[in-house]
View 1 (cartoon, rainbow, N blue to C red):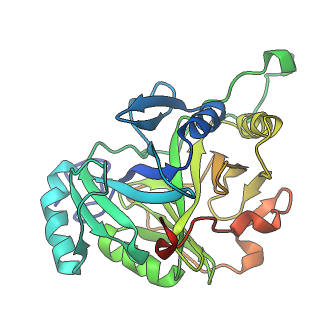
View 2: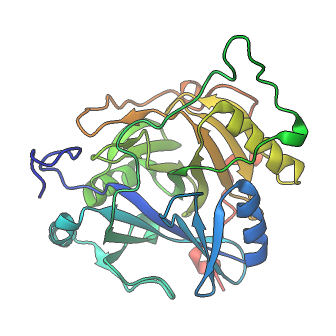
Length: 321
């Protein structure tokens, strides 16, 4: 267990520090390559899968494999400090989790168990990949006396800097909050009953590492990627829309988390989000979580989301081939 001598960590509290990576199965890897490359990620081949990186960052954020039928979320992997992995094993024993083998093709490293709604969860010793301070955000387009104009022919490519958070569908938001607080040590940032909740890491993280969205089955709603300005949010979204991806939602600003957003619908009905300037919760701050009315929880400004925005397109486990 950590103590006060270790800077940047909440003392004597066991909890995951990051989402290490996520894993999806999709029906067409080349379609996935086109989507994530245009989105601005560094897409690499390895062991028959696609591995998602961000430009200039050595961390692998996602693994995309070929699957039969509809896209599905295969598992989530969370990172813990190496000196806490044994304590985490004992903690999960005490929680009475159901241990499982690593899914086919996944790295068996760490601890595997069946999470809420049966979602496979992996805990592994890993370097902290979520930030330990609020990410840099640029707001002013140009200094006085200088032009901020960018010709379309010279528009820069948008490259996300890192994964910000991951949003999953769950059959019971409040029960899932309690489960992931107990097993992973996540803490509630904010919620809006019964439909959505946001959980952060105890060792310093964005307003949410994990978001929970109500559905009749588990699945992925969106994966969010951090960029450095509103311009990048809008330009990234416009690039994807012009390439034919959609319907999309944005540009806007959320209430909970306060980040600027643009959600791009992927080829399988879930979303990848460009996100900028999200609230940050340091390791030594007790965040005043609250339950917010629906009209005060989704977005402060921006277009209305289209009706299918909160639609779970993944099959139920019983319907998988």
